[in-house]
Image 1 (tube, helix red, strand yellow):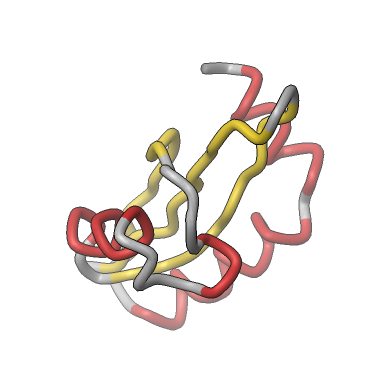
Image 2 (cartoon, helix red, strand yellow; image 1 turned 90 degrees about the vertical axis):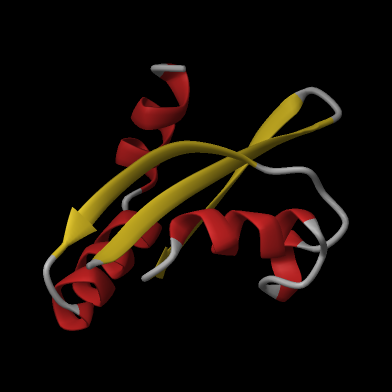
Length: 81
């Protein structure tokens, strides 16, 4: 199973989000929070706010790409917190 996920963190008075995919969501969140994940996520404490499961990597990568580019959907998910 693969997961597409959305992380958020607070930066002053804004909420910053990050989208990614993985096959081990708990381990990936630990890596992001320990500054060993993607370069953009280093030095911040992230909170998992959304994830969706996919049967294979190809489907997950396509869904990740769509979510990364769709800022309206990302903001809708963030506001639903």
